[in-house]
Image (cartoon, rainbow, N blue to C red):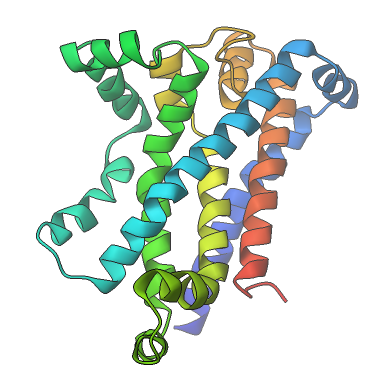
Length: 254
């Protein structure tokens, strides 16, 4: 059985590791330099980093209190909320973007765009698409982080006279900090690589809504393999870097 388990793990390594290594066959240093000095690519990178950061902060602002509620309280609709956290995972990103696009074409969506923020084919649309995509993931990880906190410590602090808000800020949050930071990094990495919902809602306009994943898609459409490989490498650098830091925080890498 041990051989079977180890073989399965190695097959996963060969599959994903082989796919990553295969792109280096087309790697070209001069193309990398051209990409790093291209105004359009630099704009796409900056747009991706900024949008992913904003989407992650917005997601955490909702996911942290929601995750705590799911971890500590029983309330009507808890099972439904817990199930809907998986919604972005069971619906394809393109379908999720289509749902958002359809929403902004109904009366309420039109009113929001006319009186508040325009989301369709705009930077705000990129942030919204990423936010909706990662919210469930962020809330799921936040819930797991709070479930790791010993409730007895909270009860002891409460008995000693700590208010609910003081207890949450000084006891629960510090104890869950490691898991919440990991949730933030993983959510950020997922937002950075988001493509389908962004493409559907925000479009592919250069110097406006072009993100790094969309730039990869456009270069591939033009059969620019070297340029595509270069951009994939940059995306992997950001994404795998975030994963490495996350695993380091969780103590899985010594």
